[in-house]
Image (cartoon, rainbow, N blue to C red; front, side, top):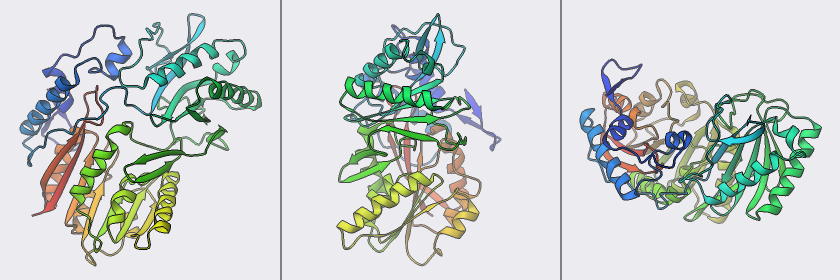
Length: 417
């Protein structure tokens, strides 16, 4: 069924609708939460990937999009791959419970069947947490918990306590809780308090002030570490990072191929985060600009670039900037266009780039633009803009960043015509 986009009068056919209408996910032995979050979690992965390829092809045809679709890059770990997971804490039937759902008034008892997309170690940690918050020692603190969040890699875990209230007794209680976690699992390398007095539905809501401090380290390193191929990264526990660690290597290799780096070219990475693309691909260019609105992520990207520069006498000149990404900020922060050949990569959030950003990128005359979409239904709108600004689709490279769900990540190479 077509969906209406607010910026476009004509209808856009939804990838998610096409996929869910073409295949019925198995629902046996799943509660309402898991079937909504991971509808294909109990489906054979080859069948799921085949259904996604067919649905994407139909989506492309129905929306009259250009460019040949490559087969979707399969996730090396199609199940139990998520490196960020969460549970909502709520009180029901005289005990504290954990749910996928964010609804505080959801009164259904949880089935506790576990997730097909989350590591088994996460499930064990949540079971341990659930037992502890139902003991008298932690009952008072549990009333102030909104979420329990686990982040990290497949080998090292960080636990975050999302709390609505912070005071001395709560901090001391959570420190004791963290000590219990360390003893429970040696792979839990750090723990933090994340203060969100609004009890936001988003489990790591950085938009609220949260008081004098936002996070407090209970133990362990202040940052999380991630190694992909030959590059090591660090990022803050509340900063954005992709949820599927297993597919990051093929994702970076695909982006490298599409960007076609050369030492005499300039690379601009918009929405760069902690520098996943900036530092891996950028070191093959001569000059690099990474821009993101999150100051913590930008600083981590800058630190990674400094470390790389110390190891290599021929490292690219890298410039990281913290800013909202809009026309005025890009005009102020980027060098004059036309002074050398450019490749631009942009990986915006689901709602897409800001007003005028695509036009400004096109006006710079980049020889290659790589636009990454985590929201497939956004593609027709933005490709229409690129076409209007003089760019055509050259290559389309889908990746199954989100196995078990009706979503894909799609990289599109655009070139001037």
